[in-house]
Amino acid sequence: MQQEQQMKAFIDEENCIGCGKCRRVCPTDAIIGSKHLLHTVLPQFCTACSHCIDTCPTDCITLSTPGDLLSPALELQLTEKKQYRLNPNSLVPPTILFPTQTPPISQAANTITDRKQSILDAIARVKAKKNLAK
Ligand code: SF4
Ligand code: SF4
Image (cartoon, rainbow, N blue to C red):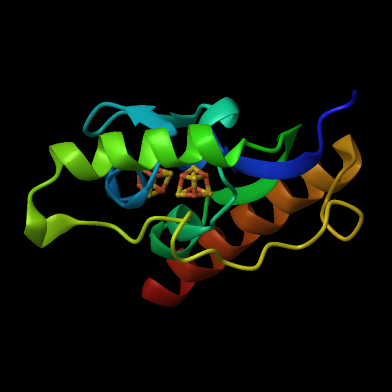
């Protein structure tokens, strides 16, 4: 039986400044990376909740990598693991309890061309922000 697919988070590593904000808000610990170094997404743990996208200061994350939908059991297990090691003041909203709407795969960028375009758009946004800051 073929597993259902969804678009997973992808980090455009050229524009990642290693701030770690995405890693902190990811409910399933699907993002790895060290402080001040680039971060990357483990698509097999990503629920496509978009929390990382909302928090990234350089807009370098997009939902653009196709991958298998997580089973509710694995999602719950990963979420509980993260919640367990966080202190109560830094808990992040678990996707399994507060699901966010993500576009169906047919409406999302699901080709290599679309993915490249998403990255180019993100880079353009960063450049525009930098120009505004000058
Ligand atoms: S979309 Fe959600 S689950 Fe996926 S990496 Fe970002 S914060 Fe983590
Ligand atoms: S929030 Fe954005 S810039 Fe910061 S580590 Fe994550 S991907 Fe990189």
